[in-house]
Amino acid sequence: MRPSSGGRMRLKGKVAVVTGSSRGIGKAIALRLAREGAAVVVNCRTTLEKAKAVAGEIEAMGGLALAVRADVGVSKQADRLVERTIQEFGRLDILVANAGIIIDKAFEKNTDEDWERAMHSILDTTFYLARAAVPHMRRRRAGRILATGSIIAERYEFGGNKMAVCTAAKAGMLAMLCALAAEVATDGITVNAVSPSYIATEMFATIDAKGLAAAKKLIPMRRFGAPEDIAAAMAFLVSDEASYITGHTLRVNGGMAMG
Image (cartoon, rainbow, N blue to C red; front, side, top):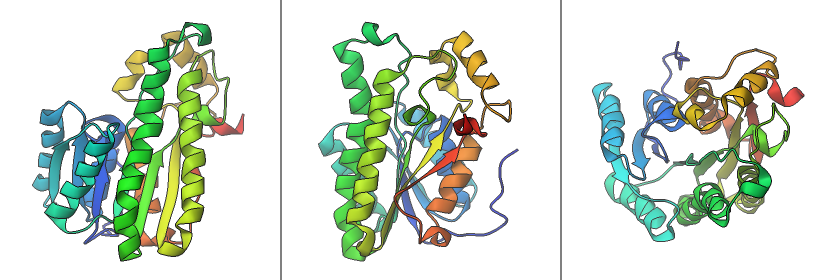
């Protein structure tokens, strides 16, 4: 069952970019922000038809949406995504950096390519997107920057999974966001993250099954989260109701971070 916004349109008139939103958590975020009243740019790296389908769902509910293919791990393409959004809608109020990957592999078996992929997909994308969005938000003295963190950046043993390279990338991203939050705090821009634990999406297929079973036992609620759980938390953090929250990582993990 999807969380409800209670009939409120907290984001009416706002414009949001959600990366990695053709499926999974990103799709749930895009749909939730649209239900809250935002116009949404649905971004994908390769699956344009899926992104268009998500945009179609938003339009079918009476919202505004645009599907844009861009590899936001390439700085010029991240710049173009922000520019296209402003050209289409005249502004950018909300940036959700959601793209990422999972590499579950013994530490010594990680290759140079694995390391580079993790940094590229998680840390580089967030840096390029925020760098493109901040000048526009500063000029308007308003904005929300939000990223998808992870339980792996604060709990390092959770059932035998091996995610050192992704942990390094996520932890680096969260540290960078805190520094950015401090820098833009007087510019009307908030910078936060939502940190999930295990969320039931297509990416589960890339995680060792025994590791998943062991991890589930470490979640006090004894269930995996749904993409809509993350979307609900993000909808709050990008709303005016969260205007005094910045530099914060909101844990949405069924209690897993308690240890």
